[in-house]
Image (cartoon, rainbow, N blue to C red; front, side, top):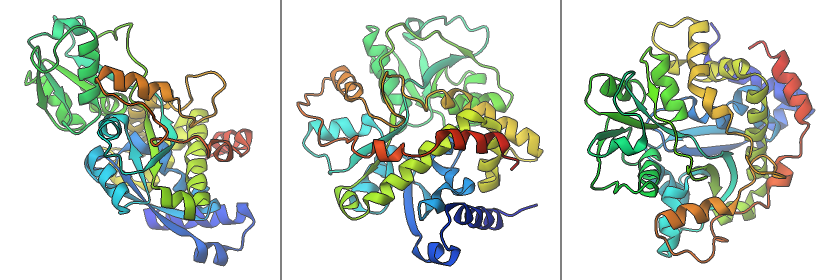
Length: 356
């Protein structure tokens, strides 16, 4: 079996040959990007952000990736502000309250790698609960109170006329399979979670039924790459390179999800279900990411992949009663054209030919 270290070394070497740069020079000049994510343990949720390492896209841009699982989105925000990570995952549910209070640390969201809307509410098959409004008086599970599904689902219930702090009770039930087990055993009546999390639960053989989404679901809750202003000043090309790697990986996954899953598992074999065969492990990743992949491309006309739509922030701020006059400090689209400056047709062809 190929080890993760040897696989990455060979992948990077291949990428250097493709780029036409001398391998020794590129290795010496490659910068390490500390990338902070709000996860307790790495999983396929961030697959399009990380497989550029395995596919050689990072090496072509002159960097390597050091992924830091920091537990919560708030922790990522603090780490980005302090410079503990070069690039972090930014989410509006963390950013907007800080911006409204004048406490925003200055980081800029510069690429949207997952667009809205990715959350649902699941119940056990055969449950008497048939709609979101049926949840009044019930226990709703979330993975963690620092995770995105908690504030987003509260907002959706509020929009439906429920008081999310009084009409329902919330229970933190953990990530992945334990959350599904809590629902299965009746610890909670319903589970609010996101697409890839539900995929993990279903991959473990736990059946779920989904409440139909209200027709008024807001376009909120995208996930973004962010960095501090000094990084834009000193390492702008590095930010473009990382964004381009994520963009290429997203196109690769859209073209051949199975190939992307294999690349991810070669990087992180420990994420495979214990005792699973290679094919079963790939199937589990595919089940996890099947909904998420659809959210890589922008749902807005005339928008390049990664482009940020300010209306998402305005909608979420209004839902939370936040008074924000100006969003310019929060985000920028200035890197999007350069990030998308690559041959997408070539990337899709590479995906089709990928053997793993």
